[in-house]
Image 1: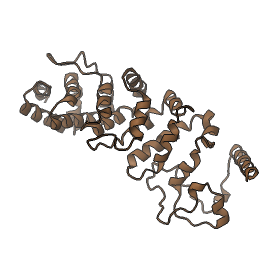
Image 2: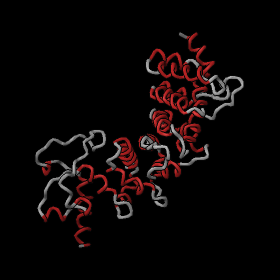
Image 3: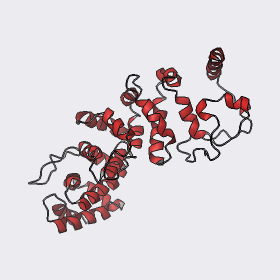
Image 4: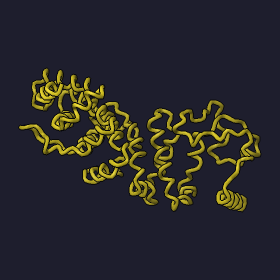
Length: 315
């Protein structure tokens, strides 16, 4: 099998004959579907480098197959590490122009409005940011590219950015993964950038579970920054209704109780459904019929009482 990999590598190159290249990439794609095949590919850094180069292939079908190979490889933790740590200059085949590192290359396609493989590249980036020990290096590569975190937020929050139909929803998990890093959380929570305010509406984004879940994961990570809690609950951000709305169903309340709710949670339509995905909801349900019997920690009780008194003074 290793000899076959060696032979395939000769044709998985930009300059190879089109028909042979198409067949070779298709075979490699099949190999990425098995653990045995994947392990063989990971022993061939020249092949990994060539697959990254083929993202730029002018034949759309070949570029798509190459991108799907990288999706499958990066979904494996060892594969993700191999791609992030790959020295593309050292392992570039002869007579080929070495590609940039995998992060820079996939960012090119994510930001290219004409790219047919932007969604696959978002999936690759999501996979590469999943292992926590790779996040710091990925961040370094992003900061070393001509694209910044501001640019990623702009693309993620823009409707129909890609002209070829790519949705870029997997940038949601990318943000969630990256926000495990303290530096990224501080960027999202920068009071002058309004990043978190732009992300909040997507907690109820019905069109994509992936995008919705990514934003909720990002917010969850940002809430570990205790210094910003007051600001997050203030009118400048007003995070609470955006977190509660997905948890709300079509329950009926009497007028007195309804008036106590934030405006966004009052008089919800009859077809309003509670978030069905358990990974997106808050922790598992308490499982008590009477929520008044739940023991509230003393510090939370004091905070709720203070907020209640402030609200009464304002009314």
